[in-house]
Amino acid sequence: MTTYTAAKVFTGAGPKEFCSAFTIEDGMFTWVGEAEGVDAATVDGEVVTLGEATVLPGLLDVHTHPSFMATLADSMALLQPLVVTRAGLVKQLRCHPGLGAGPDVWVMGFGYNEDNYPDGAPTRHTLDEVSTTQPVFARRADGHTAVCNTFALQLAGISAQTPDPPYGQIVRDQAGDPTGLLVEPDAVDLVYQLRPAPDRDEVVRRLVGLNEHFLSLGLVSINDLYGNFIVDPLATYRDAERSGYLPSTGVFLAYPAGELPRLTDQDRMGRMRIAGVKVFMDGAFSNRTAWVDEPYPGTESHGIVTASDEELRTAVAWARGNQVQCAVHVMGDRGINHLMDLFEDEAPWMGELPSIRFDHSTLFTAEMMQRANRARMNFGIVTHTVFFFAEYDSYVKNLGPRQFDIAYPIRTLYDNVDHLALSSDAPATAWSTCDDPFLSVKAAVTRTAYTGDQINAKEAVTVGEALHLYTGKAAQVSVFRDVGVITAGYEGSFIVVDRDPFTIDPSELDEVKVMQTWIRGERVY
Ligand SMILES: [Zn+2]
Image (cartoon, rainbow, N blue to C red; front, side):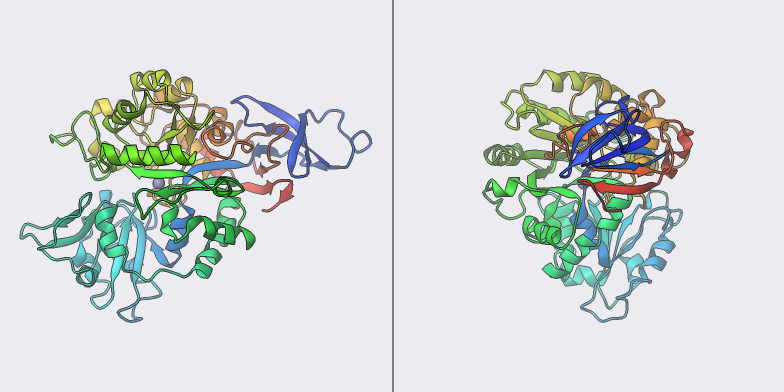
């Protein structure tokens, strides 16, 4: 048994819950209280003094993509602020170590955002400047769009005659020739599936290699919202765990990637487990494909729908039958309302946990919140403040004033909705440090984009509320229930940060550094 004392301990149980001492035994918190009166003479076991430090529970990121990160280990980062022009994109891709290694070696990059490239959006001709004799492929920051060179198009057999796949678009020029731009996964995968995938051992090594990344950000428990970036995801995560991978990880399987398996109790247990199924029902705001009520400014388009009602029902039925969550990628208000039309009267199946998650949930009115609360179904909302921080330009361009007013309404959601979490969607967010929770906290508190512009200042929350959405609140959305709160009976995981986030100037919040990360009573960072 070890007792820890610190100047200030945020417990994560609520926005204003603090203590100054706690005890961990066999990896679990067993007592929480005040440091006063705690000394080596009066308590059993060891006493560890964390001194003037501020302590928080281990943080959760309930929408991130470690398996995607593992596949990107051989891709160049094209994120802002690293790459801000089309010429810069070419320059960065030319640094790929595989360039010049022959026609079987792919030159890949990820995370570009052409919205404010002064020299225009990249096409196959841009990537032909990188190579005409090797496949060159760059995925956009949102993950839904990619651009490839002429060589890669030819490899995939894509020509002017190739029809669009059911839920994707091969973008064409005025002559009808493919521009190299592929929109939505169905189209992107026509090319992407041809790249040589790393073998299991290599993927395991890459996952273990992510420890440092997650633990340095204080993240001890995460959800992988698209496990199918790797083959046999659960078995691979469990191999990685045996090799030292540490964050507890709930894996969502993609619908309908192959046949969804029948889950066993084993699959739903342990620190690596299947958490649910993930369905995409609309696109993104960056390319005006999120499904919205009010048409995109200057158009009659309401965006697109990427799953039929029957597919949504099948995914929900699978989740119900297998006792896991159904997470739906949905950004637009029309999409969210449509999901409520379909499922609000059905019985939930996950007990206290949301059975159906609305992941992203960009546009949300107070009316929609009331509707979600009234529903028989237990809905959860997983959203992001780092989206408007990093992708402000795209929201300015693609949202009308009424939509702007209901974009990421964290204050109103926090006050009205039980199941709510903040998360990063890394690495599908156009910012190189997008999954630093303190960047999201800063955006939630200041409502400021990277440009310095404000978005909906009335929707600001306090530091305690924002951290609550990364700790105790996030745990009520995730399948790992005994994390995110410093309280007896929960996993003894906590972090020590280098300054007090509750008293510093909010403009400094993204400079908070994690000094120590502890999982189940062991210091792991
Ligand atoms: Zn995602």
